[in-house]
Length: 249
Length: 252
Picture 1 (cartoon, rainbow over the protein chains, first blue to last red):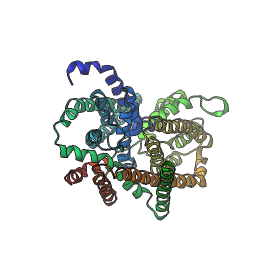
Picture 2 (cartoon, each protein chain N blue to C red):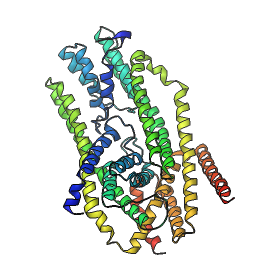
Picture 3 (spheres, chains in turn blue, cyan):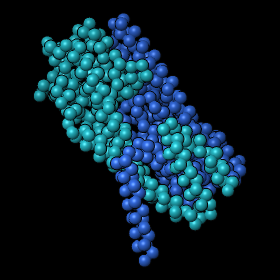
Picture 4 (cartoon, chains in turn blue, purple):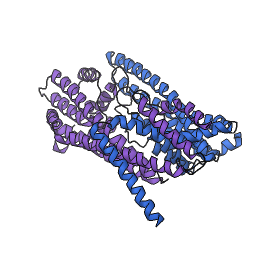
């Protein structure tokens, strides 16, 4: 992607960076409406770039991967928002349309797998960023408490506002960084991959539902929960069989 | 400052700030600063003396953690007890601290069970399944509906908390909490089954394609790996760990 091409995308890029800041705030720091969940974030980024389908394909697959990551205690949180929004924007700018995640074979599936890999890597690396940010929050709180001892109550609000602003800036910067890395390095590198690697990448989106089912079985897999899981699976297979029979006749 | 019905007229301001309870979440004292900051404007307007203001802040800058969706119930109760105290009420500081700690823990437990372990996976599964055929709007509608509902409920919880004060504790004994947790978890389990069924159908439909057999084998092996490693690995980490398997399968 040449500099003039990048310049042509600046309104969409600016909107995506703003969306990144808002959704990262929503993720943990403010309101927690779940609009920052990957399936929604992907679609919203896709709408900005005029390719909601591409956003859905990547967002849905990332959502499946993260269904078992529950924000309880100090568990792995992952930084999915920035990498996901950046990857959706970069894919749209490069003219990639990953299509449906479980559609069929071909180059699109390999591209989706390549983007999925970028988001997974970004999320794992971004988790470290979140941990550091929280340590920074500890320092801010400690500073605010020192200020309080000196009689300055307003330092509490200042520290809280600084924390919120820091989270938003992290969202904006990770989205921008992800877009730049994916658009300028990751997507061009795809053409250099050997055919066998592309075939392997095409398998990755298929691993996402398997990972989701594995983690959810862990979550609900008591004896009673297993019955409900089996019932849901049996009902779906029966409905698919009936629909197939109706279609055949 | 109080409005009609005995509630302070700036509960809306407390509500807006309560949404940022986790804005300065930190590993040492977790939501302490968010809680103190949510109540500060109300305390200032209540005309508390500077010394009282500082004592109040120190009290609420101790460790505090609860589920953010249930926090407003507790926050409303705290504002009620603190405002009663400012008007010469007699809730001892020790009782107030115990109320905050014990109710915070109870709401964290109930809220985590209901929201994080029940409703969130179930609702996100619903969003995923509704988008499975490639539909863009259903997941936004599902999550948008949740977003509006939870924002309204958090506002209502603040008002209820203020009205009940110490009596909030009675609410925790309601069987409705456990019914809601049970329902959310069973819905999640049912939808997990639906996801498994839809994955099986999608895999089956690919069996005739070139490389379809490898895809199905890969999905099955990934499921086995996820079941074996599920306790330790987040989804993204598991996907990265499965890349060698995908490379191996591509050689078949």
